[in-house]
Image 1 (cartoon, rainbow, N blue to C red):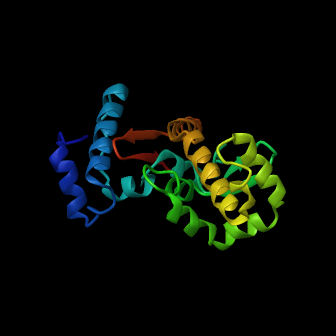
Image 2 (cartoon, helix red, strand yellow):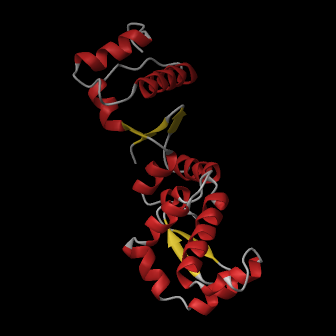
Length: 200
């Protein structure tokens, strides 16, 4: 950049313009490095325009978050992940909900709490209790006597569904797909803790 702007000068310029909250520290460093690389590859110096950079670039916590904001539809949306049982019973929940019920240690209380949520309870109302029992029986983890308890079966089914969703969701694959999608449309700067994209 003109006048041999150092990284410190670059960061200070954002403070001087009252834009020090526009980007996190790591993002600002990544943006500086990116602009320096651009100058070297183009063999051209750019004028430091803080307001212009704030308008042209935006920071996001994840590539998936950024891509979804611009219309990307992930194969696995963390906000609506679906479990299919052996008998094709369906149960939809968020990744956060699934992980809340599939951690180390006893999960009973967390599963029971999730089962009380209206959007989860409504899905169970539509299921046939005999189908739930048949699904659980195929797993062979409970006796016929234990499977006579329909309330417990709902807890068991939800626990299995949550565990399956948590294990099958691949966050790294989703992030990679989002970065590739963004790269086809604009410049992307990936750094530790987030991503910067150039405006569409």
